[in-house]
Image (tube, rainbow, N blue to C red):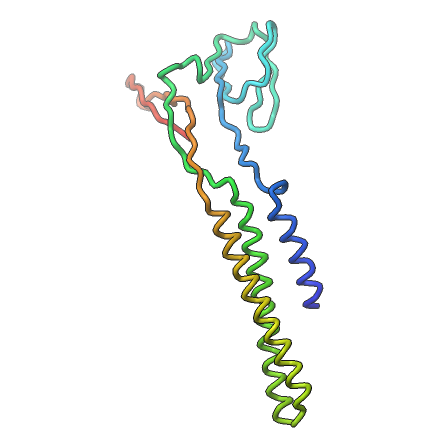
Length: 191
């Protein structure tokens, strides 16, 4: 049972720590606002801008708009200084956290195995089975070495997953009006 658990844990670990399986951090940011003729505001990422059609991606869905439906198009570049530049902290290697958990689990299993072997060795010493007790103590020693080495890998994976990266982004200002009917302009930056 423990061997199956260790095997599955190792497979999960290998799948989670490789950079190919790491999260790309491709959280989609809106770079275009399209104001439609009916007053609707669509905010998303511009995929293609043609002479007759505009193709946008909004929350993983693709929308196509005819030029006759569009009142105006505003991009972050067209705002110039109106778009706020913010600095955010990202954790691009957060998927290594899975490796930290897997190595931590392996470490715990090895320390548990070492404890079981030591207890059995003590019982064998009481019953004068010294050669068996020595073998169990050797197994316990090896299991502790494996436990400490996987604990070090776990700490290393945790350290890698918590490496921050600063990034600058440009965001749209959010415009709104008060609900009591008084003319009011509020600017709110969302990111």
